[in-house]
Image 1 (cartoon, rainbow, N blue to C red):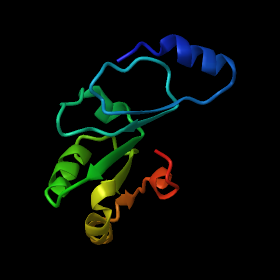
Image 2 (cartoon, one colour):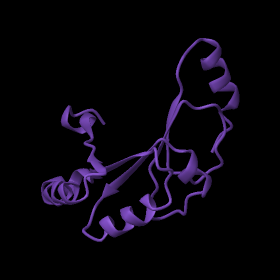
Image 3 (cartoon, rainbow, N blue to C red):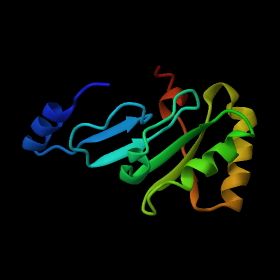
Image 4 (cartoon, one colour):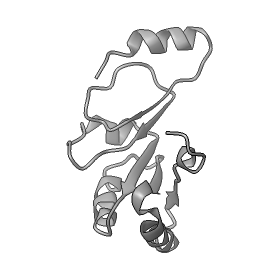
Length: 121
């Protein structure tokens, strides 16, 4: 949404690592050490994020989301991490499904919204 080139340039000049999480909807700007690509169903991401991202993180809300996750993973660069995260309001129902999925497909890992457990918005 914003040009982050100047920000990342200044962070790099201060010897800082740069990390971003993005839905991939807007053009990628800036110099990033790590890109977490978290596409959303309601907006199509830009294709560049599949090859440039270090991590694919998908929020699972419904059983059908596993098929959606697999479709995205097929486009990812081979070095990227693949993570599934239960949608917070449906965690009790969805987390057991994610665990079963990861046992069957160990290329995937589980991600949890740690800040929600600590009651941080």
